[in-house]
Image (cartoon, rainbow, N blue to C red; front, side):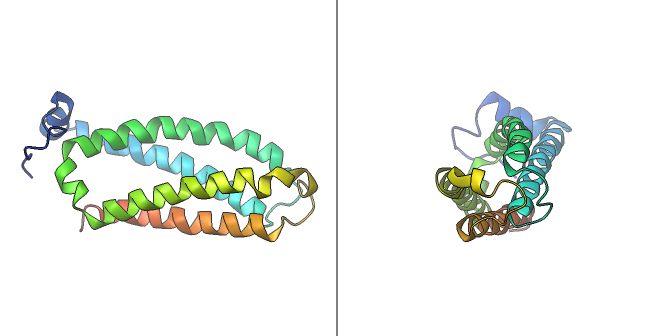
Length: 159
């Protein structure tokens, strides 16, 4: 792939991402590690809300996993931006990338709805009680969205 006239691709770091043999793969590995941490945290929380391990407090699990999720984002965002910078023109035109970005936006909206909606009553279903249908629906949607994000991420290289 050759860089276009896209100003992002002309940045020194973007050029380094393309020209240094191990830089892009190293950044991609860090991106994947970040995604493993984020999606692992999300899946554990979502499965708990769906009813797995009801003896574990939803609030305690949230307090434990949320820092991992935020930490993962501190890895994912800069590494994703770095990879994007190397081939911005290709990514912008890639359908898998477009869908992935849309799904990430939906994931954020879904999380905001969950935390400002069903999670506000978590004290009523924290331990040993089934979560309300709204909470279960939100986390089920979350699981589907994250499966889509992962799938689109893998398909980037093939579409």
